[in-house]
Amino acid sequence: MAQSMNNNHPQGGERKNVASRSHIWPPHVIHDIQTKAELGRYQIRGFSTFFKIPTLDQLVFLPAALTRLPLEGYRESCDTKTILGGHKPDLVARPMELDIPIYIASMSFGALSRNAKIALGRGATMVGTCTSTGEGGMLEDERIASKKLIYQMTPSRYQLDLEHLRMADAIEIAVGQGAKPGTGGVLLGMKVIDKVVEMRQLPKGIDQRSSVRHPDFLGADDMQIKIEELRDATGYQVPIFCKMPACRVAQDVKIAAKSGVDVIVIDGMEGATGASPEFLLDHTGIPTLAAIPAARRALEEIGMYGKVSLVVSGGIKSGVDVAKALALGADAVAIGTASMIALGCNAPIYLEDYAALGAAPGACYHCHTGLCPVGVATQDEKLQERLDPDAGAQRLANYLRAMTMELTMIAKACGKSSVHGLEPEDLRALTLEASAMTGVPLAGVDKVVAPW
Ligand SMILES: Cc1cc2nc3c(=O)[nH]c(=O)nc-3n(C[C@H](O)[C@H](O)[C@H](O)COP(=O)(O)O)c2cc1C
Ligand code: SF4
Image (cartoon, rainbow, N blue to C red; front, side):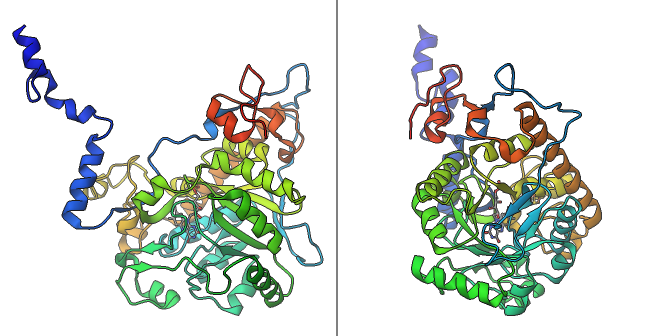
């Protein structure tokens, strides 16, 4: 009796840690409030949302059995060639031709080190795919390292000039990204070093917050004019991409497609960043799982599915994720975080430097600090020397090859001689929410939870 009275006391006995089990006030929420109370501002960090959200893991493949014939996974070939923006030969003389449907997402020099940009370019080139400048202009070394390079045009117009537009293999109009929809980029002062100052024309060492609204267009009509201008400026040679966060996907995709872009890139809410207000990472946009079918349906509704290329990004970890994205309707995927991890992000080396950040290998999300222990997301000369561009490129190429093996193995098991033959019918959903979001039938029941 005495024991149970003690347990019932708010500060007594076994109940002394009971507050930490609260779903409303768990330790991280208490810590967040304490930090805001101390700093007087919200928290900024790298990486992506830590919330548990529906992902592609909630889908499984149905490989061939008696109703379909599989291909020999170890003997027969499966085509991976991917052409982005190849639907209008009169407007795009050189569509983006890739050997695999995976490329390196737009990540800026500034967020990433020079050595990381070179490694990404060389690694992508080794497997016949492309990379992208990201915000902040084109670094000479990355142009040399990347056989195929997308030039990103952001609202901030950093280092936007005609010469660089013409040096690119594609132009990407950035409307936003999944990590921080409706908000511009952040580059904390420690990363604003001389070269970044030169490229972005910013004051040295001062936090940079870039704009989000394009000065050149406000809606579909002027976007169409901008696209025509870009085609004219680049001599009708290269495709025009438009990258958007996954928000009102149906409407945004229709507007972009009607404006005349060649490739639409949808970045789901799990898309990562070098630095973002944390609340935007966790509470804005919709998951990649939901965004892909929404984009596909939107294009189908206006008769443009297959006439505009669809790329998705955000949380792509493996060749199996790529296969699921393709089956749902994408032509290709872009990867950010996974490519950084392949270079060495979160590797178990320089342990004391992780510890100094309050992090540990496998649990680091501190790109915003500029003190990356492995030289990937830093502008510090000494730290970035820790990443050897050739070794990094080799690791990235290995990873991309392994992803491609997984992708083709799945496709062959489903009886496809091209990875682009994967289709929604090859998938089943493991959860009601995945079925409702994707329109893929629930496993075993074979019924779509929400028929579109
Ligand atoms: C370090 C870093 C820098 C980034 N810089 C940019 C950028 O300059 N422009 C942009 O549109 N997206 C940027 N992104 C977002 C990526 O292009 C991509 O949308 C996102 O990383 C995809 O999600 P994933 O990391 O899960 O693959 C950046 C992401 C990271 C991790
Ligand atoms: S190891 Fe470097 S690149 Fe990876 S999360 Fe930490 S700071 Fe960012």
